[in-house]
Amino acid sequence: METNGGAGIPAINFSEGDAMTAQVTDVLSFDGDEYAIHNEPLEAYFDKYPPRPEIEASCSACWRGYVATWRIKRSKLYLQRLDDFSGKLLKLKKELFPNEEGPVFASWFTGPLICPNGPEVQYIHMGYESTFEKYLIIEIENGLVTKTMDLSLDEYKQWQKNRFE
Image 1 (cartoon, one colour):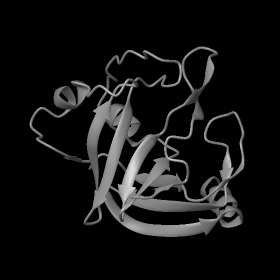
Image 2 (tube, helix red, strand yellow; image 1 turned 90 degrees about the vertical axis):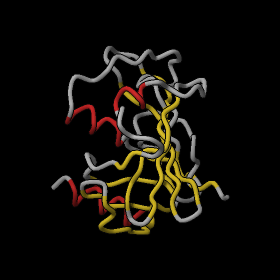
Image 3 (cartoon, helix red, strand yellow; image 1 turned 135 degrees about the horizontal axis):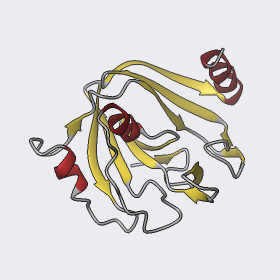
C-alpha cells in the first residue's frame, strides 16, 4: 500500500495556551492508498455532542491526545480506530460508541477531508499550512462522500480562497 502526501508528516495544531508544537495527523485509507488528513473529523463529533472528553495529551506532538484512523468504503466515511500517541488503542472509542463493534460510520461529519497528495513544496511551521504539489479533496455530507477533487497546488489555493469568500 502506497503512502501519499506524507501521511504522518507533522503539522502544527494550536491548543489552549500559547504552546506551538508540530502535530501528528490523522490518517485516511481510500482507494487502496493512505493519506494524511489536514483536518480533524472527530473534533466535529465533539462539537456536535459536547462535552469533549478529557483525553490526556501525553506528548506535545499530539495535543488532541489521539490519532484517528479513517477509511472510506462504499462512499461512506468510517472511524476505524483511535490510538493515543504511543499507539495504544484508546478505550475512548468504546466509551463514545458503546453500541458499535468495529468501524463507526461518521454520520456526524460534514465538510471536506483535505489530503495532501504529492511531494511537499514548502514547509511552514504553523497549522496545516505546509504546501504540497497536489491535494485530494473529499467532500463529505453526513458521513457520505459527495465529491472528490484532485487539485494542483494552484487549484487548491483557489479552492481555499473560494471557500472563505
